[in-house]
Length: 356
Image 1 (spheres, one colour):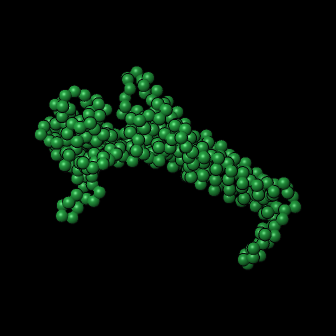
Image 2: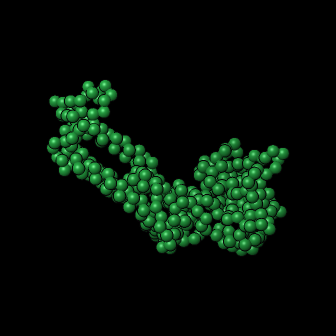
Image 3: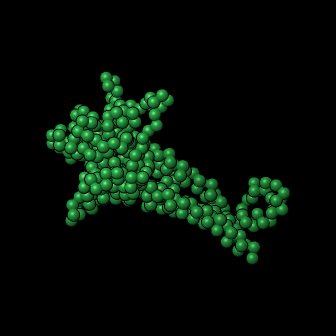
């Protein structure tokens, strides 16, 4: 039971001392898989990420920590308050934060963690396919004890002085993609390209809360439409004069040749290549730019809580990382709707002006 992994976990969780002291932290608490209370005679294994204790048999049957989905949110297991448990022995204690919940509850009212999640047994009561012992098969190759949220990195491993755990908490979605690339960039050992940034351009940077870069790319897109505005009045006149042919299905747009603002008409052709080149350049540097953005903000948030008069509170710190980091879908929707309105609004205004 007290193998190297548990010793490491004991140090990380601050549970230093004798084996009896270590075990005493779990006596009376509940296994998050079977929801049964631990006793002094139970064989207990501890998740190396959040510190949640499990019966070894329960962990083997499940194959991973029951709270794996909450690791990315920075949840760490806390022992329940013994006084509350004594007063209400039937209360459901959250295995993630230790809060007391109604016995009939399914999710924690404080942090949202599942209060009990018993995996369904396979046919004949056998372990579901793919379930593994907590730290690899005995005698076989040892599995990586860290979840995919860290991209194979140790949560305590640092990238330019910031831990992988803090980076993952700030990044949120796809942290398993960014962490190895951040490590690669920090080690100056390769080149990365972000295809999402290439295809979605400024929308992607807004999504990742890099509003300054997103605004620059959006402004560049708007500037690239200036030549179109010079050619647009003549284009509208051409469309109105050939409306009958267009309604009859004839393709008359190939016949359009402007007689005014020829420079703008030529610039329209080259602008698409300029935008493509800029998009490729930003896609090549997107991961590097995002790494700088993440590290800068994580350090800023950490310094704020480190200088707090009440002392450093890791729980509030991890909540702040998730709040100020992650992604912003709302700004993407607003930007998309705004672009559509602006595009058709300009055309409608100019068409109405031409028809007067």
